[in-house]
Image (cartoon, rainbow, N blue to C red; front, side, top):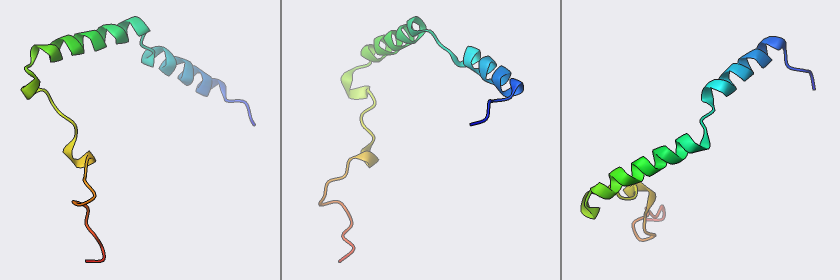
Length: 64
């Protein structure tokens, strides 16, 4: 396997620095999201994606 070029390594280092987010920042964002979500009544919270859940009886039977 060939060694990556200097330009690629410089690009990779730059993107790694730009895209790295500390765990503390991620944890703060998750906590803030959960706190905002708890403010909503349970009936107004977004639920699961209805397209992702299909009963076998609802599925189209190609034999029909």
